[in-house]
Amino acid sequence: MRVRFRIWRQDNARVKGGFRDYEVDGLNEDMSLLEALDHLNEQLVLRDEKVVAFEYDCREGICGQCGVFVNGRAHGPHANMTTCQLHLRSFADGDTITIEPWRAAAFPVIKDLIVDRSAFDRIIRQGGYISAKTGTAPEANAIPVGKEVADRAMDAAACIGCGACVATCKNSSAALFTAAKINHLNTLPQGKPEQHRRVSDMVQQMEEEGFGHCSFTGACEVECPEGISVANIAEMNARYLKAKLFG
Image (cartoon, rainbow, N blue to C red; front, side, top):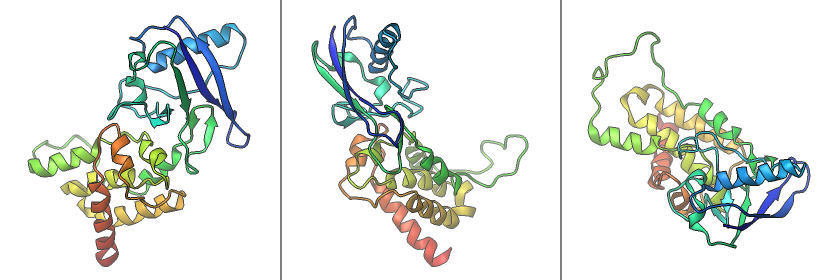
């Protein structure tokens, strides 16, 4: 299988970047897109050229590190899928595959396809945790949690922090990510003691990081690998108002 990669190359956020074309042969349809990029980099090393920098870790759709635009869509042509789960069988022999990094002011380019998503970490630091006594693990049934509550919390907790919601939003909003992290903990009894401070501090940090406001188009839900609902944003807004009134 032979494809033409059109890849964004940029040394850092301070210099201008641009697309470069690479013809790659010797591929097969069962290879993942990241494996195809590995194959390209091996060829670049042999030609004494700079390899393409891209992020990955687990390559199992769990870590959220591999996020890029593929042919203009976050993570590629399929819904609810990370880039590492995308295989070449989704393309035809001879296709041109365009790959570029997330586009958001809050996600500056580090190099090529890698962006700095530490803004998410700073949002988490403002409340993405619970107060708990240290020591041995508590009894699992010490705090009863109803199934409906547990299911809602787990649905929000599924967020892997890939940033596709930010990259695909026309306002580069991080509302879906922040809402998922807030609702995950505020839904559970263990998160109730900090619930008002959590939502106020995390929303404030989100705004300070330079993310835009929610565009209400629902693009974030469509491109989210975990299919996290935009209903979480509405719930976060209600919690934020309540925190301002009673926090």
